[in-house]
Amino acid sequence: MATAWREQFRPTTYGEMIGGNRFKKDAISWETPPPCLLFAGPPGTGKTSAAMVLARTYLQDFFDPVNFFSSNASDDRGIDFIRSLKSIARQGGVGVDRKVILLDEADSFTSQAQKALRQIMEEAHQTAIFILTVNDVAPLHRAIKDRCVRYNFKPHLDHEAEQMFLKVHTEKQLPDQWKNQYRNLNRLCEGSLRQAIDLLESTRKEDDALEEGLKSLSHGLSSAALLVVGGEYSDLAAQLRLEVERGMTRFSMLKGLLPKVRGLYDDPLDYYRFVSTWGDFVDKVATWPSDDYTFVDYFVAKLIEKKEVKKDE
Image 1 (cartoon, helix red, strand yellow):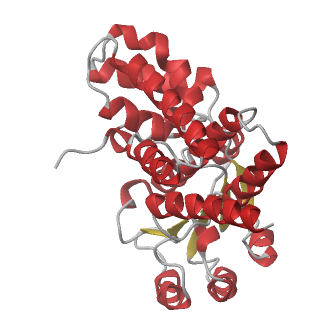
Image 2: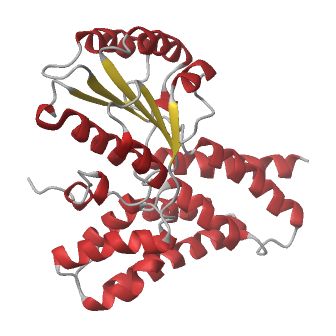
């Protein structure tokens, strides 16, 4: 089975990491990592990659599934998972003092699960290193945040992302004309290397294909904005689903849609009704419990609901 490019180009050493400079400087100086770490930031900014680099560096020859346990908390959010984690943490490492436990998207844990996790983190600090990644720190209990050394990961700057794109470009022998679009690619993907590399992989390898693809993504949101204002909700749902299929993240979709909608409404009150719904869904981006398509459907359903409320006023 072919390995996705995002995995092929995932860093394995601190030197290969793009961004996360404060974390890298501190991590290189550690004789042993802190028992609890919290990596916060938007999707695609290198949180999971940083955790895996730390695990590889600390565990070295003992980097294997016995000593490195990884789970996506958006799939395992409840108390039953935390109870199973308790025995994993207590077992400790094989060949090393402590195993590394990575809990991706830990902001998805239920309140009950977080309380149990806090206790495990307190009890297992001599046998395990916990690394939690979150898109949003707000849903985490203060007791968990206070136990962790926190690092914030930001969207990649154009020159940082370009380093990675040029590495991919060389190894995958991409068309030379694409080099002119790499900074535009980073901006369209809101600094998410994961999304950008997925786009590079999925785009046909022809000279003008990347530029055409970027224009198409931008044009797609312009079309969606016109459908919002026109109240053509079935077509709007289809257009936003298409953007998801093209690799656009929930946050990028919402962030790109707002400026295109602004100024299209004749009645300013209609615009503010839209912004009210838009803002609610920006808050839901990181904690949405289902897939992207359901996110789109619910967003459109709420726009319809606001329109029906206006009719009744």
